Image (cartoon, rainbow, N blue to C red):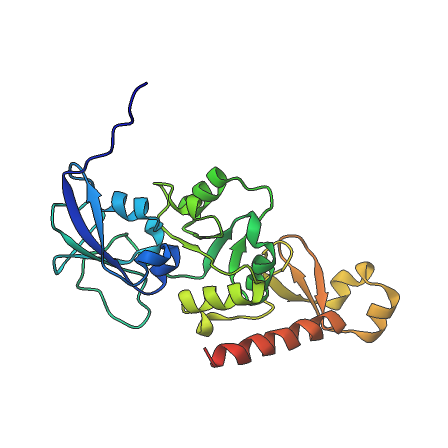
Length: 259
């Protein structure tokens, strides 16, 4: 019977991950300095992802007091500090990990985030979502249209081609919304009811006379201000559904003031 050969490692580096990057770590590594054993000279991106951190979550890497990019080759006795996206600190003099910053308001969501997609659209954010997108399609569209990937599947963010993405932590759609708004600093970019919640098209005001043939008699009688999606041509007006959504928007905005 053959014996299993125990892995041997020639080198060891020390790692420390900060703030929300700790969400991806096992309990014994959270907010602690811990060793990482390795052979050869891997690019720093490889051990970061081997530890469990999607590279899209990382905005700054400091090795022995100096900022480096993902191509830096890990060396024996290196001390590595890894940071998430900064919202209030200007890190412009430091080495950039990607061509453009990990911020924006244009998204593509995976199959797990359908309710979040509708809410982001309600707040006016350009949000692509289909429940039949596969991972390859999501990555290709993200790259082609410069969209940030939002996903609950961290493995999707490990894809080498992915440059911008965020792993949504919560399973609660309302909490998910607060996560995304806070992460990408979107409070000042909210434009409620400017996009279609169904297809993501832009909504514009339309003359009643041009859509009269599409209105039910009571809608025609009681409402005079109408809006139409420029993509799917869905008609909107300020009926009971609008007032329910408006109340929800006011609640969301009020909660965001406290976060």
